[in-house]
Length: 186
Image (cartoon, rainbow, N blue to C red; front, side, top):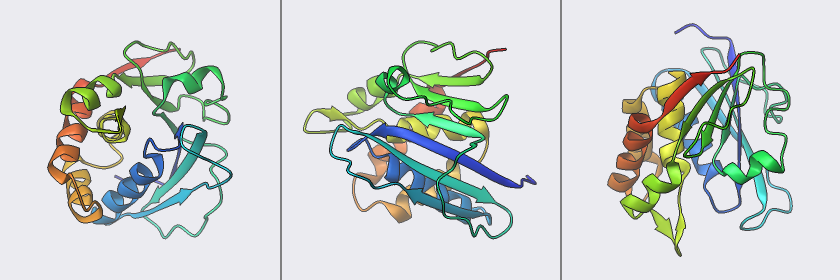
């Protein structure tokens, strides 16, 4: 796949693993011979506060490490953020937005990929202190809906980049890829 620099912005809440997901996506890209960087944004975040992370993926070396202002894709792991954060801000025309939601969030003008990542995490027992870890199913949905990396590369990235619950996280990524629905809203 020939690409310029593909830019992705992640939205979630502290403790939901958006930084980990961005890091694993960058690692999966490098495993495919691309250049991938993950840029976490650390402000005054705490568990439950809105957080962001960013990716840049390219076939050429990526030197820019600043925040992504005009993403090609946006990933929203907490659907409540749709009401309090302008998640589509700067999203390129016909961009892809991946949302953890059991229902189509109907975001006009974008291609929307949605899945019930919360339900997947709960069914798999992928939780910490009762809080569902939705980043892995959402990461699988992103890979499937965008084709930016293969599921095989994501699985290898999880094996190399995570120290625990590797099999469970791989199952969550696969389920996210299987259950994602994509709708083009014009």
